[in-house]
Image 1 (tube, rainbow, N blue to C red):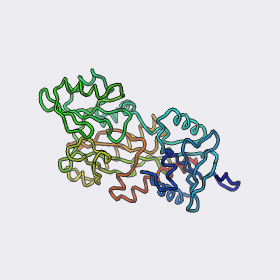
Image 2: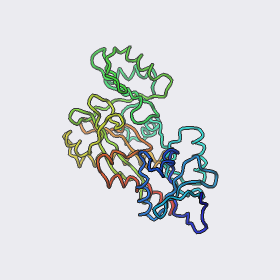
Image 3: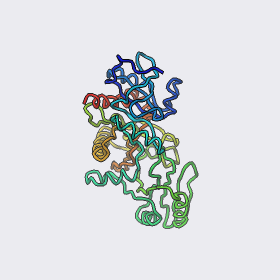
Image 4: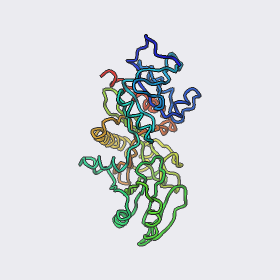
Length: 358
């Protein structure tokens, strides 16, 4: 271990907080979805020094971590960085306590990056200008499910705190009494209203779920698609749309997540296939997305780097599906949108530099 040298300048140091497994994989170049080399290149371009940390190695006034300088890593103990970009999940009480400890000495942006879907919906519904872009959503209960099935012909029942489409159930009315259920990798199932409700209630159990009106998504060769929008704060702290990627559901599937068999496509290609003007539709999606994140950041000031899932319906209507607090960005990599992919790593560091200079 190398301790901080007297000559080291900590004013240009930006903390990058990683999950422990990712942090330990840096030397082995096994960091999962995190492209650490892109953080290093971005920091070098901006005249900054990245300091990689995990919460297990943080104390009240200092942190043990990996400092990247002169093309190599040093294991070093530094004072807590003034600014930290959080890329770690903090789902346990211990990790939340450590994150709070870090936040006492550092400006941690995206401190909380697993957002309750229903809470986000409720925060956004308070803004009249945004309501039209929100599908109707409500907390799950047996009574709410019965009411929603009477009012809507298609619904999603989804966990309020999950990712990559885990636990999502879609139900669609196929007749006066029959409903089609789609969930996980199972074959669609036809059930009566009562049996469908009983099945869903059993699956939900005591977990926290919400009910959401299903959007009649535009399709690409018969398969529904939605969009992942990278919305980030950068220079001068301003929000920007760094990139948009399309996600097309696998044949016969109800979720578009790439981890669930979905396929990445450029949004312009998808818009053309749906009969939309690709440039106008892209501009409209960007405008709505900026409105959403700007409003949301007034309620949750620490958010600065999120991935929005946005749907476009058959008529070109735009609806927010959910907000992802830790966007993995791999859609851009799969689409060979190399500059956009690099920008998704550089933009948060530009924001960090803005905070350091401020």
